Length: 291
Image 1: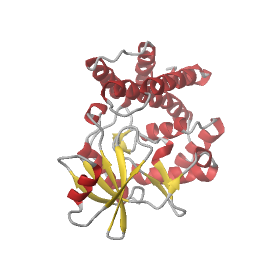
Image 2: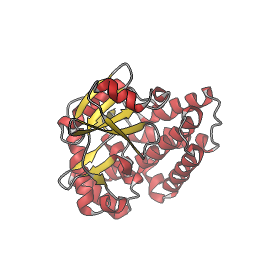
Image 3: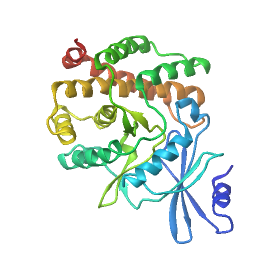
Image 4: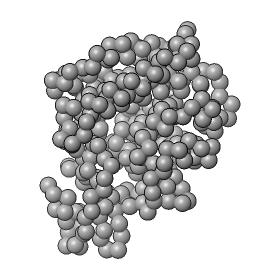
């Protein structure tokens, strides 16, 4: 269905004006102006359930994030179609360099705490199971599994053993730079489609690796979040950086078989395999795996 027809269905007889927003590589997003107000209409991409996305869970997580003051207000949800409408944030993207500063890191931590300390949300996010499921899905859709998968999976199994059982809290799990907006007063986090009960340290590691934090910046991140981080905390962050990229690489592999968007997912996957190899080459990585 065309976006204008979707908007007419949600706002019948109100003459909504629709403008496509760029940036998404899973869904299509539109700014809708109606009745003097502005909203964002998110239309899910094809077969996104194969990426582990549950639109009902996304809706619940988006509502929870809005209540925590971290996500935009949820205005409407058409469950049978998976369409989500949120209030348009009059903000701007936040450059990576800005989020790497001490002030930027502190703002990110405050936003994440609002999520992590909130009530339980539906769904569960486990990166160790996600990469396994993505491989099965890719094979089903006749996508060639990259040669680096077997080596990365061995490392992932070792990481899972080293970390052991971890506490689960509400998490975003997809802290790409594009999912942060600022409006001059607050930092917003958008796109909650992978949210679920998970390891808060995955969120921290996901943010760290996607914003290419250096050692000093990671220390600031952990200190802002924990106050007095332990060596085990530093090890968990280092190991889960690897898992963040492994998940992202396999996401790119699956997308090669299901996405209809014009995007080079093969290169995207290889870039993340390359980055996780760099993470694993750090001497501290192997030390973190030691019993």
